[in-house]
Image 1: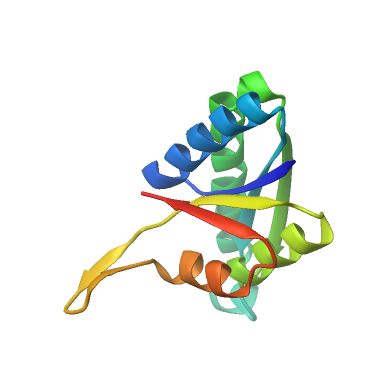
Image 2: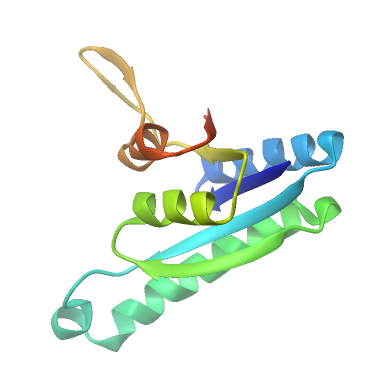
Length: 135
């Protein structure tokens, strides 16, 4: 079994890493941590090189923190760059042949009740494999 865990510097992402690491140990699964450094067209033109550096450093720090949380599983770590985190997550999961994506959400509560955050809801809708969303 192959488990992919997208990470960012949030508490729910850390919870997802912890849950996925528990599952990986129990199932003897391969665990891969994925951080996406968000970029967008013309970022450098609008904000200069510093903005891209900040996004890269933020993603790299989240990846390092996740590696510590999942240390007992010997996780693989991947850092990707792009303007659509959900598309990158789905693409990595599909091309890598992952069986499960475990991710956190910054859920929002509206008039209709509980809703998933935008990235997690898009991953759930687009992924070829099962997705476990933790909060």
